[in-house]
Length: 281
Image (tube, rainbow, N blue to C red; front, side, top):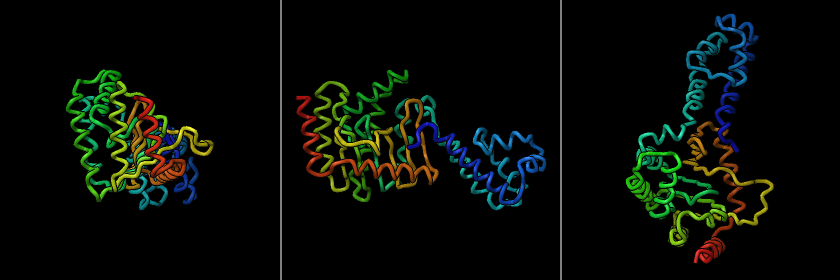
C-alpha cells in the first residue's frame, strides 16, 4: 500500500518511462545528454527518480528522442506527481473551515465513495459532537486558528450528500476504532448509536473488520478514501496525499477489496457495534 513514499515511487515510475523512450529510440544516456546539452548525471537522476522532470525537460527529452507525441502524456503524469502531497500546514494555514470547504467540489461530483478507517469514524458518519472533539484536537495539536465551530458546520453540511440516493457509500472500519475513545463516554455512546442508524441506509454499506481477524495478508493501513475509482486521498501524520496515478489507484482498490473481504456485514455489524456501545455504558 503506498504511503508518503508514493511521490518517490511515482517519480521513479516516470523516470522509467522516460528511460524507455530513450532506449526505444536507440539513444544512450550520454548521447541524449549531449543532444540536450545537459550533464550526463542529470539523465541518471531523472531516470532513477532522484530529480523531478519539468515540462520543459520532458519536451526536450522526447523531441531529441524523436518521440514528441509522447510529451503531453508524460507531462500530465509529472504534474500529477507534484500535486500529490499537500502539507497540513499549507492546507490548514487559513484555518480548519477552508480545509473542509476545499474538498466539497470533489464530494459533489463523486457518486462512488469507498472509505477505509482504522483511526477515526469517517466524517460522513460522525455526530456533531464527535466531529467537534476531533477538530479541537487537530486545532490544539497543530496550533491552528480557532475556527472549530464553522469547520464543524461545514462538515455537517457535507453529510447532506448521504441523502443523495444517486451516491453510494462503502465504509470498512476496524473494530478497534469503536473502542478508541474520542471525548467523554457520552460522545462515544451517541456516536455509536448514530453509526447504527447510518448502517441501515439503503445507499450505505458498513463493514467492520473484527479485532480477531487473521491479518497475515492484509494488515491495517492508513485511513483512505477512494472517489469514483479515479482518485484516492490518504491522511498522513504530516500531510494530505492525493493519488491519481492509475497504477497506484489500482493498488488502493485492490487493498480495499481485501479489507472488505476481511469485514463482516449485515447482522454481525450491529452486534459488534452494540458490544462496543455496552462498553461505554
